[in-house]
Length: 75
Image 1 (cartoon, rainbow, N blue to C red):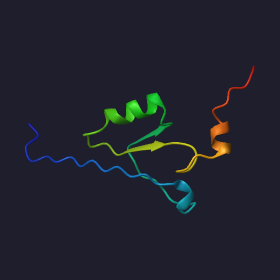
Image 2 (image 1 turned 45 degrees about the horizontal axis):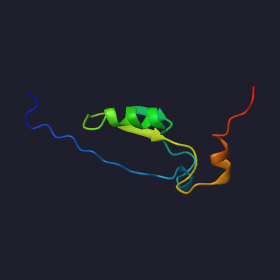
Image 3 (image 1 turned 60 degrees about the horizontal axis):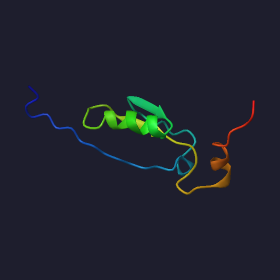
Image 4 (image 1 turned 180 degrees about the vertical axis):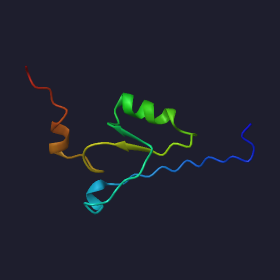
């Protein structure tokens, strides 16, 4: 059915703090958050022709400000 069809899997990790402010990231699907649900959803698209962008807050190294985003606040 899909004779001669090749699907390439390219995995890139890019720190958005290192790219120009006006850069456009072109993808078919953008998943915000790489927690359990985000990474599971992204893995569902492996081996497909969809170009998936998985966004996560913070940089490549842990920092206190980004980690504080996961703290709970009383209602």
